[in-house]
Amino acid sequence: MTSTTPDTRHTRQHTTKPHHRYTWITLDRVPLLALAALLILSLAGAEIYLNSGLVIPDTPFRPVWASYDRATAIALVTAALIGLLGAATIPLKHPIPLTWRTTTHTPTTRSTALWFTIAASGVTLGLIAKGQYLLWAPAYLTFEAPPPIISLASVIAPVALIAAGIVSTRHPWTGALLAIAMATILFSGATRLFAGSAVLFLIGRLLGGIRVHVWAWFLGGTSAAIALPIPLLLRNQLTHGLIPYTEATISHLSEPGYLSTVISTIAENVGFTVPLLVHVAAERGITIDDILIELNPAPASIAGWDRIVTSMRVHYYIPYSMLGEFASFGALALTVAVFVWGTLLRLCIQLVADPDCGLSLLFLAAQLGLSLISVLYITQYNTRNVNRVVTMMIALALAFYLAKAFLAHFRSSELQPPDAPALTT
Image 1 (cartoon, rainbow, N blue to C red):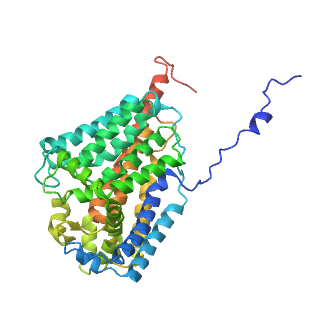
Image 2 (cartoon, rainbow, N blue to C red; image 1 turned 120 degrees about the vertical axis):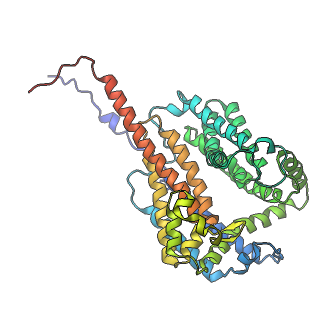
């Protein structure tokens, strides 16, 4: 008797998992790797800047640099790296490979309009936030919109750049124009996120299913390094806005010594993270109650943040860093805080990565954008700012779970025959 079962022996021998050279570099580990690289670069940058012979100007930043101690800096950076290593290696259930994509192909086919809407919304919110101060502004950080709109615009900006990258996988010119528009708005506000615009755009292309070559990442990283000093130099202008900033940028780029300015500015500003960590760690006025207030997601007036906000700063322009706040309780507290932060970020990213759900890529792009903001915040902003971003990531993970459950229920009800007879035993 001849069997009708298909012979799968030859098929199975070719059905092997694709081999990836660096399987430990996963999407959920990207923010952890970014923070590790930033801390190491900051330590090197601080050493270069302090040993360069440059005179530190008499600014609010000077006391922070003056408190730098190499042995303390190395010890605290090591403690933070141990926390990151623990968070990166803890065996969570679903690490996300860099080649991850949904099985529905939603991001590059049926949902291009959705990604366009997200990117266009980011551009629109940015324009509304700046308002009449887009082209000309009397001072740095001058906006026309109310604070909630400004906060929303700043949060959605990195997500909009990622969305523009996804749009570019189907419509290259449209995606590129959206990214340029978003980067232009960031440039008009002299924000450091402007420098990372190209990298975020490439992340979007990666999420959209396009293989991003090493040279593209190299060019993106190089452009970020060259562009980083620009917003920092522009903040010292007498007039602000897109037009004055454009004129000043052309002037800066045409200067023969701009390359040395790039090197020193990167060393000074990237390197500032570790001196700030050392400076805040030496503060003995930070209490457990202060940390609990910062971890409270309630509004400032309810949580008690209004009472301590002025004391949790080095200067009006320099808030404490979360790393430094926990380091003030000792190296072990810093390690635990970084471990918890990194683990939460990985979980929030993993929980929205469902290849069978068409909404997954939308939430994943948002989580990656917020996680990169969190990397910046944890180094140079206080615990309350970091907690606000992490709380939004947790809320997004919960929203994804509810949306997925609703879609599953909706689909099952569609498949159910309208007049199906009741089952009896």
